[in-house]
Amino acid sequence: MKKFLAGLILTTLSLFGQTEPDNPPVVPIMPFRSEIISFPRVDGEFSVYYTFKVPYRLLVFERNDNSFIAGFRIIVEILDDDSRLVTRDIKDSKVSVNNFDSTNDNNLFLQNFLSFKVKPGEYKVAAFISDKNSSGELPLKPVELILEEDKVVLHPLVIKTNELICEEQKSFELTNAGGKIPFSSETYHLIIPVRDTSVSQLTISIENNEEEIISTELNEFYILPPGINKCEEQISVTKNQANLLLKNFILHDVNKNLSEGEVVLTVVNEEKSIDEEFRSQIVWFNKPFSLMDPEKAIENLSFIASDSIIYTLLQESTSDYPNVLSEYWKKYDPTPETVFNEVMSEYYKRIDYAIKEFKGIGKINGAKTDRGVVYIKFGHPEKIERSSNSMGQIVETWTYAKPDRIFSFIDKDGKGNFNLSEN
Image (cartoon, rainbow, N blue to C red; front, side, top):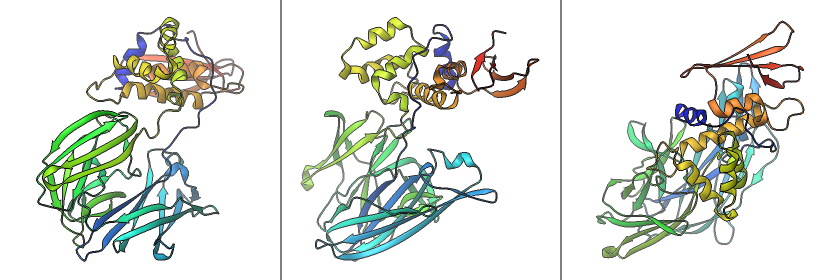
């Protein structure tokens, strides 16, 4: 895919066509996410699971010899209608990494869960989170929890496509994104648990931003008593014999044709008088900052597109800019069978990186620098070397392979403002 983008960019105008600088980005990341999952138990009560996921970047790491250690505490309380405490638990989690870069990695997460045994009824779930290496406790907004004995279709679960072996059992990795469905190049499945195991099929439809995208019959299922466990540092859906046997229908690749925004899932079985509706969202976690504002994103095409093309795109209605941008990138989409465009995502990730990493003294936006432009067009080099020339100036050399290319940048004033050498 990176080679594809490099090939696209090589067909553009001169090396230095670029926009005016923007402010350096604060990279948006997935914040603390939690999800409440409940399954009916054999004894008539419910197993309630509170799962959570927090990016390493939001944790406070302290150095300990050759490693970096962070700790996280969560307190979860389940309250009845009169706000009286029903049950309470505390979970302390710890993570250790061997390098500093991992502490700022948006794609690494601390995950865990708490479990409770609760009678049917209506409750509120309150949670308090704190970082073990910093002071203060943050209360989260209480969440309503309704445990119904006669509810046939339980809330769907979003799972990853890979399977885990947990305690010698095959299990499914929970996405653990607060019940949201990721907008991503990865595909995800949906598990729809049904209490009545005599149900043979489900008719489901999914509306995305008020447009029906999916309408199909589900006949594939697993019959097992589902529970939640932690396996290989991931949260998984696995067997729990204390829970009731459920028929778990599978909808494959649920996010394949869904765009960012609202999603409504309708589950129907006329024979069993089933007609349930569930609401969620398609969310692009870690979306490039330079893609947040569609108008700015169009202007940032100046690294690869002519002024006339950008001018034409900007003549459209402002409200249509997201669609205009999407249409522009479709011709470069390596996976046109899906909505997510990997090339577009990679391009704006490079802009974010360049803005932050290549700014010198007095430079607001590193994307405007020579190194920034080269990085946006060609990506990360195979090799970066630093040396000094005869004038004592620092020379940074970037080497690319396939195709072979070498770029040399000189810091003429010693302020980190590297200019592309003409040699």
